[in-house]
Length: 281
Image (tube, rainbow, N blue to C red; front, side, top):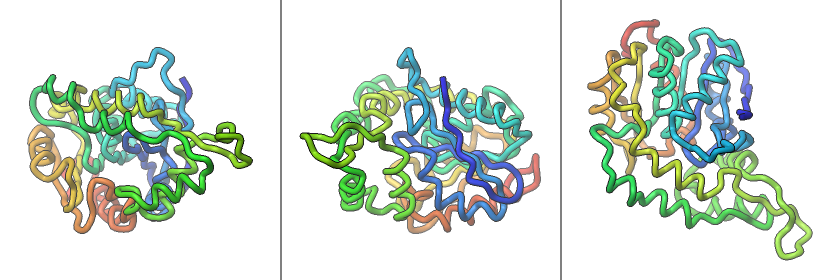
């Protein structure tokens, strides 16, 4: 299965960036630009996202996202890179470190989807995010109309304009024009049924019960205005980790890395500047 890799460049040690469900690597364009003064930034499209392949068997278990991350680290020959993950991407880098301890030097996870406790079958079956994903509009007559649509609706309307344009560029594929039109119609690369399936499994993957196995320093970060994985969840996760702390960033929500990349980049630089093998301070 092919996984698309992006080289954002930069100066310094390697940093692997992993995106959230439904997004793609290109949305990190403004974040990587700010991180590039301190890190060489790489990113990937997770399976069934962006330009990466969809698994032939349709299996979208989150352990597969960890395998994608590890495959990229191996393909690039990275030796002890740093890792950054947003939402699903945060869980993916934690899962990758659990699967292969010592892969990462240190991790920064912005609102990782790691739910404390035992998986709740009711929550998995009746997942509001999955239901919402199945109602998503998949096609637009043109990239410009897709951009205009997202620009007018939260949470996309709150994104950095460069990140939003990158989402439309990387997250959509060109298809024959709709209704006989002359323009280039576009369709979501991460199909809505796949996105729904991914959300459903977000409450059942094994990351939480193995957090104690992770030995590298981890920063768990969230937005002050989040309605998703806030301080209480992250503190519970941090208690399971050997070297971890929680940071709350002002003025942003769950999509913080795409809303205010300068703010998040400054937090990442400070966090990952801690010495190897020591808790971030």
